[in-house]
Amino acid sequence: MRNSLHPNLDDVTITDVLFALGDPIRLQIVRILSDGHEHLRPDFDVPVGQSTLSHHMKTLREAGVVFSRPEGTRCYVSLRTELEQRYPGLITTVLEAGDRDGKHP
Image (cartoon, rainbow, N blue to C red; front, side):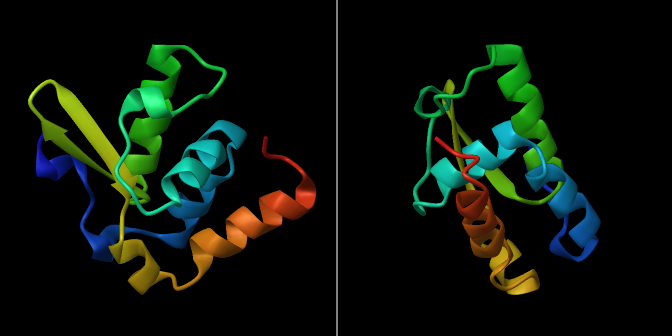
């Protein structure tokens, strides 16, 4: 995995971020990542197959929401910390709205 797969922060748009966060599976992934730690794929207990999980991870990465860091045969995923600088409070607000909707496990 190359760094070029992560968009430049200046290219990250609110529209792309909100689209990525608008899917329940991707929102669940972000909820897991909101603990501030890096996670491996087995940490994501979501009701989709591996290829679908990969698609969701790619969507989040390309929207600038997550950062993927390869290490050997593993890939660590975390929330992209720079996103908070660009859109302060956005992730927290979206996760809290999901809580109010009762849409997360």
